[in-house]
Length: 166
Image (cartoon, rainbow, N blue to C red; front, side, top):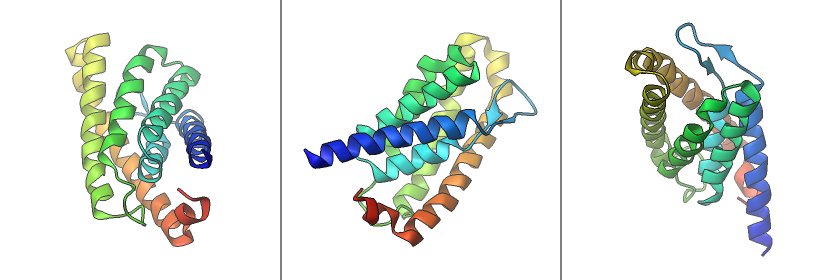
């Protein structure tokens, strides 16, 4: 019971961090209608620290709430599923957040994100809008991965996972 409550609290914390890092610190894309943000890094951290389905729930709720706060409400249903799927590639089986599986998971999560938002844009608008969003979504995926690697290195060095029992 104690572990379940601990996972639920961590899930809520990561969802809040994801929403804040996505909605509060935004750099508009030079092309398209989106923005760069650090929210994906917290999705990846949650995926590397929390068991499923807590990681998926944290990602889906946090990123969807950021869409709501940012005025991108049309993307909420897409974001909910895309961000949850992104967590499936990561593992928490290692003592360290940065491990080979989680580094490779960045490529899988990036593909899921770029392909997912391409499909969302094609459904919402049209193919031309979807194609124009590919570059920005790819760069956003790279930004999220870079921030994740930096934060994960700090978390690993400080032994955060062990200290909070995740």
